[in-house]
Structure formats: structure tokens, C-alpha cells
Length: 274
Ligand SMILES: C[S@@+](CC[C@H](N)C(=O)[O-])C[C@H]1O[C@@H](n2cnc3c(N)ncnc32)[C@H](O)[C@@H]1O
Image 1 (cartoon, rainbow, N blue to C red):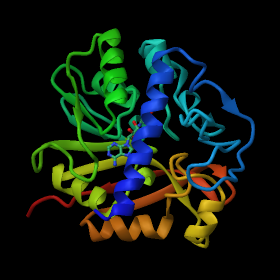
Image 2 (spheres, rainbow, N blue to C red):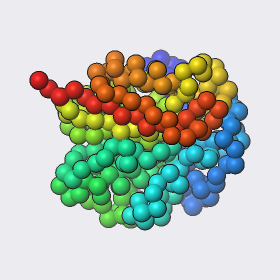
Image 3 (cartoon, helix red, strand yellow):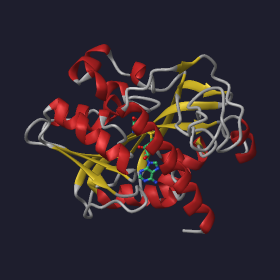
Image 4 (cartoon, rainbow, N blue to C red):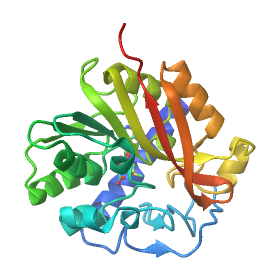
């Protein structure tokens, strides 16, 4: 990676380490919902809305992000602390339509909510992995795993650009509001294709920009660590998925998180072997 990409990744890691510590200390994060959906700051600066950055460096959560995006019955399945640690922009477990016995991988698993929900969906004959690069998030996720009593779960330290799992080892890749944070998005899409079995699928939620928004216009709407400035446009997502070998790709907007920026459901399939 370039120096700039490394620096971007470190900024993301520091922000989410602060978020995990804040959640662990029961600071009113991430439950503090900012009132506005307009994001105005440039990368790294404190902002006033969306997945904003506090003066302490932790992103807080804005309208259109977090635990409220899960169904009430799903929230009831997990310890309150695991639900409260949600920093996502959607509900990928609902997108992925998980089945008993499947192996699931969550990219950028954070406090673990989607891994723990997936583990319940796939049952004792299935397994759910989470990968995250931030030690503090991994510790929070492990605490939440123990609280939930989940045994078919493992959190792995690693980057989503270099997933620490073997080729063709998972049936489903999910991710919730993380790919926009990756410094090398083509590498992430290639890793998703590598770890999936032939015929495997992705069910991702992410922030996605309208096609007519330039990278500069995206950065005007929110910070990189706040999940806005690094978002791909819909066409960039579809082109990237095709370049990584996926088929039947779709990017469906669900709700606006900033002007011209949306939470989106991203689905695609790795072709079956012939
Ligand atoms: C916005 S939070 C989302 C967490 C979780 N998916 C959720 O829905 O609550 C982003 C998470 O992705 C992790 N992350 C960001 N970029 C990453 C990368 N390149 N490799 C691995 N983890 C990454 C961060 O450490 C953080 O835990």
C-alpha cells in the first residue's frame, strides 16, 4: 500500500479503537444519535452529524446508522451491550438470507452484532467468523460473544484487504458499513471472491454515493472515518464486483445518510464451478 493508504488505515483504526473503548466504558456512545443527516466536515475533523467524529476522536453515530436498523426481535436475541455497539448502516444478516449449517464471514466485525446474529441463524452445524483490524474492537466483540454464550463464533485479527482465511472456505460474506472505510477497495472485493466457495454469495450493507457525486463532493458531505468520504458510487461498486469475478450483482439504496449518499444493500454471487 502507499504511504497515504497506510495513513488512512491508521486513522480509521485509531477512530474505531476510541469508539470501542467508549462503548466498553459505557459512555453514551453509540446511542447518541445526531439529529441531522447532512454531513459537512472534511476528513478527520470534528463534525456535527452522521457517523461523526467527536473531539476525542471516536466516531459517534448519526441518523441512519446503528442498532435501530435491526428488527426488534433480532435486538432481543442478543445482550443489550452487543446491540448497543452497532455502528453499521444496515442489517446484512437480513440481506444474506442465512441458512442452517452455513459458514459466514463478517468483514469489519466491530463489536460483533452481525457475527452473533449470523451464528444464531446458521446454528450449531454452522460457523460465523468476524475479521477486524482493531484490537479494541476485537476485545469488545469477544466480551459480547461471551455475554451471548456463542460457541460457533471466532473473531480474527486482520485486514479486510488480506483476510486470514483459506481460499473457498466460507459460504457467505457479509459486511456492515466497512468497505467504504477500506484504503484498497479492489483488494477487498478480490478477497471476498477468494474466500467464498464457488456459488457463494455476498450480502453487504454499505454507504454508496449517487453516480454523479465526485470524490470531492462526497468528501464535502462527511469524513472518511465517518463512513462518508470513502464511499464508492453505485457504478464503481458494480464495476468493482464485476472485476472481482462476481455475477448477478445489485446495489439497492435503502435510506439517505447524507445528500446524494445512501445506505445500500449490495448483493452478488461468485459463479459456481463448472
Ligand atoms: C463502522 S464500524 C462497523 C462495525 C460493524 N460492522 C457494525 O456494524 O457495528 C467499522 C469497523 O471496521 C473495522 N475496519 C475498518 N477498516 C478495516 C480494514 N481495512 N480491515 C479490517 N477492519 C477494518 C474497524 O476497526 C471497525 O471495527
